Length: 338
Image (cartoon, rainbow, N blue to C red; front, side, top):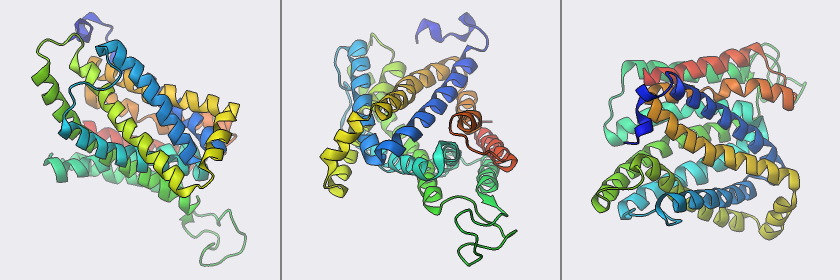
């Protein structure tokens, strides 16, 4: 255990401060990613983002263990983390960026609170983890917050003509594009499912690492999450590149356009640095200095923290209903860690 992991040697609230920084970092990631996704498209964005992530992660692994790839990962580790990469990155991140295009990062991040109930249900089904009554209550509160944010009694903003598709005034209706809601919901569900698959992969990795390394120079708790993220990002890059080639005959032109769009590339760099790199690093530190429950609850503040910058930078009109919905969803997530 690193000497700096001893809480008594540190400031009382250093873990909570770092966890709050993680939420701010992921807020910045969402804002950068929204701009980049609307300029590049989801597949070019994710292909380039995974490439940048791998460069940063490889450099980190090289500094830690002297090799730019994950050491001591066995076949089971690769299998579970690869599955996690397919679910969490290829499907989840693709849907998240698509959701940003249709409904923006503010509402898109709200749907990411679905990851907590999804992870709880998946852990119950796959790992036999206990599903406590308070967690079930948290699921209903989280879902209620999302529903409160995306439903309204106003007529559809896409048409002034009452119809079965565009209901009359005062009828409860979806206030957002259906495609955006679908993509964002799938992204949140995949995030939770991928988290459980990652947990299984990490358990195999810790076992393999301890078998090969008796006295590691770097703490496994610090090294393995970066190495696991490398495996997931590698699978993500392969998946995104294959989909890009499969669904876009002009994929070379799209990648070239994306890579030469200076504003989009700067935003992509910001999304990569604040997300997979700084966000992951800081989240690891936070869980070393404070309890996992407190850290995860503070991480989940992103849907609330993103409201003000979305209104300032993107000139979005934020309603009281949406604010209450975001707060309610985050409150529901916090119940999973009590």
